[in-house]
Image 1 (cartoon, rainbow, N blue to C red):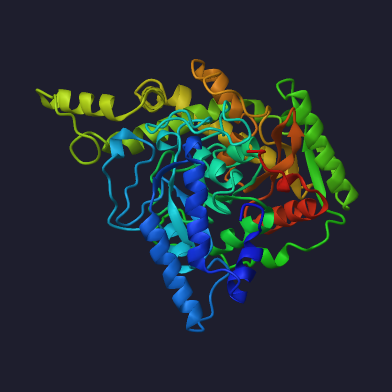
Image 2: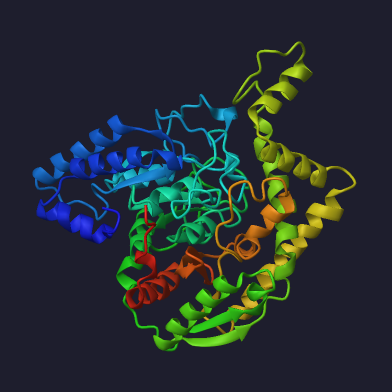
Length: 482
């Protein structure tokens, strides 16, 4: 199943060569064999088999089924799932069982996709390595001594290991694209507002975005078409006409103008990563694209602005977890102050506590103008840079991450070095743009990722370019030896 596209799996199901239950059982068996990766927090085998049997019954009755019907997948453990624990990788929500489904969960269930369970993640989506989970670190299938990236590392590892053909993820500053690059798969971050955030536990509300990780751009397009759309329950959801991106994948690339952002090829980019990305760009040029140099002059401010804005929003969003209204409650409090402080100290991990403190400081009296307001002004400059660049090009390209996957524990004691892993991804979230990471081959035996960025709501253009590149190369078909 790991090498099969979702279209191939759907064809097998439609022809009766395999059943949805067989696909679910196969995926569950693969998850058990790959348990050492720690990519899942919770597997719902009974729920998966029940959903698969329902799809098989509908097919046997002659019902017309969507493209995803019977396809197994996994949800990042940040999406609320009715009756199934949703923990956000945190001790704070260890016992939280939502009474409702997130919009993404509803849409995929309606499409007939079969959820295996919930994947591991950095706690409350705060991290670049998936080492911050209360359930332990996730290992990269390419080298289990290395990180899979974060925060959607569990989803990326599950897809890269062939457990499931696709998984949901969220991207606040690169948390879909960076793990996709580290694990050698394709990851799509849609335009902000294109996919509903209803039922997606908030980290930074103006940055969070739901998306998908899969083997190929074609598979990403199928899932994106299923999850995108207006939702009146989400105040940031954008009402736009439905666009069948999967039907637009085959457009030729002749005349497509791709901007090469010089700021994304700085001194911090590993030589091997840069070589692989340039090779991918040459292939796009051979397919008819025109490569153009562009500049994003404020890109070097993106990390600083992001790590003021995101923690500030996190400090507000996570204030609700106080031991009274939501989440873990300490058993050792002797006063109301201790109830708050001990519940949060016991429930939150070190990285979450760090970001709450940074965000609270940035929003405090006397520092709001100096930090938060200034970061928002820089955010506007970054968005303006993208707008100016897109006046002359259709897409912008560069490495997704400056390096290949680093070793577990290598950056755990250096928060700034860890944050720098997001240097090429955070600006996209600050500007609310869509972007995709796709494999560009191996550098030193580890995957390197090419990032393509598009103007708002141009997901079809992104997926088309990525798909045409993947038709001409086999980098996305490379799999970990194990």
